[in-house]
Amino acid sequence: MHIRRGRAAGTLSWAGLAGTLGLSCALRGGAALAGDYTGSPQVDEFVAEMSRDYGFASEQLFGLFREVERKQPILDAISRPAERAKPWKEYRPIFITEARVARGVDFWRQHEAALARAEQEYGVPAQVIVAIIGVETFYGRNTGNYRVIDALSTLGFDYPPRAPFFRKELREFLLMTREEQVDPLALTGSYAGAMGLPQFMPSSFRAYAVDFDSDGHIDIWKNPTDAIGSVASYFKRHGWVAGGPVASRAEINGAEAEQGLTEGLDPVKSVGELRSLGWATRERLDDGLPVTAFRLDGAEGAEYWMGLPNFYTITRYNRSVMYAMAVYQLSDLLLQARGGRR
Image (tube, rainbow, N blue to C red; front, side, top):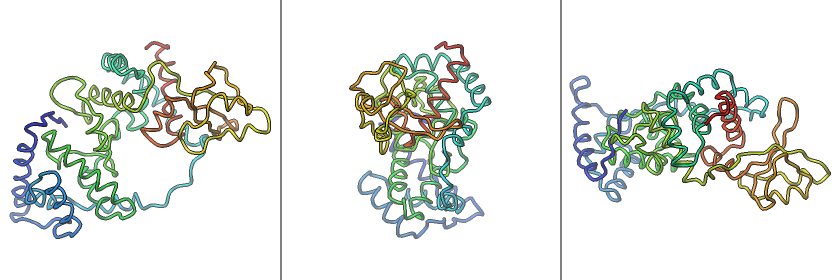
C-alpha cells in the first residue's frame, strides 16, 4: 500500500475520493445499503467534530461510514479476559527462537543499506531496528488483516472502556489518509488498528513515519525501507542515545537489595543508589546514570537487571519490561549471528 506524501493537495484529493464512496456502496446489490454505523448518534457527533474542527465535509464522512463494518471478533478479542501474566521464562521463548533469529539475519542482509543509513542518520543500531520489526510482525509476516477503519470504528464506538483512545486514533487515521491522499477503506492492520511492519498506530504514523527512500510515498506496509526509517525515527524522537548500552545484568548482595527494585518503568533510580543497596554490574556505569531496576523470573531463577536510558526508550514503543527485554536480547542474538558486524 503506497501512501503519497502530499499535504498541500491532500484535502481535495481525499474529498474527491470520499465523494465516490456512495457510488461504491450503491454498486453493492444495485442500491445504497445502510452500513453498521448509519444513524448512530456517536457517529453523528464524531462527524460533526471532524467537520467543525478539521474541515471535513459531513456528507463525505457519512458516505464513508456507510461502508464501515462493525467487527464482532474485534470486540470479542479485546474483551476476552486477560491471560495469566506469563513469567519471563515463558514469555522469552515466544520471541527468542532460532527461526526469528534466522529470518532476522535474512531481513538484515536484504536491507543492509537502508539499515546502515538509518543507523547513521538516527543513531539507532541496525540490530535493534530489525528486532523491533521481528517482535512486532515477524518481519512483515503478521501485520493484520482487518481494515483499519473497521477496527478503530468498532473500538471507538462500541467498546466503552477505551472508546476515547480509539476515537482519537480514528480521528488521526482520517487526518492521515487526507494528508497522504489514500483510500481510508484500503489500509489494513491489527484488530487494534496498528499498521504495517512496525505496527504504528495512526497517531504514531503522523508523528514519526518517514519517506526513507524518498519516492514521494510513505509505505510501512510493503516497503521495508520506509518501515526501517520510521522505526529509527520513532526511537530517535523518544530519546535513543547513539552508542549507548541498553541493559546490564546485576548481581545483588545484602538485605537491602530488594529495596532497589523500581515501581513502574520510569528510570527513577540511579546506579549509585543501587550500588549502595548491594547491586553490582560487570560493566562500569556512571553512578549518576538513571536506570529502571527490575527482577525477572528466568528459567534458572531470579534475574536482576538495570534498564538503562535506551532500555526506557524501547518501553516507549511498548510499555512492558518483558517486551523491551525481548527486543534487547533478540537484537543481541541478531548481532552475534551476523558475526558482530554492523
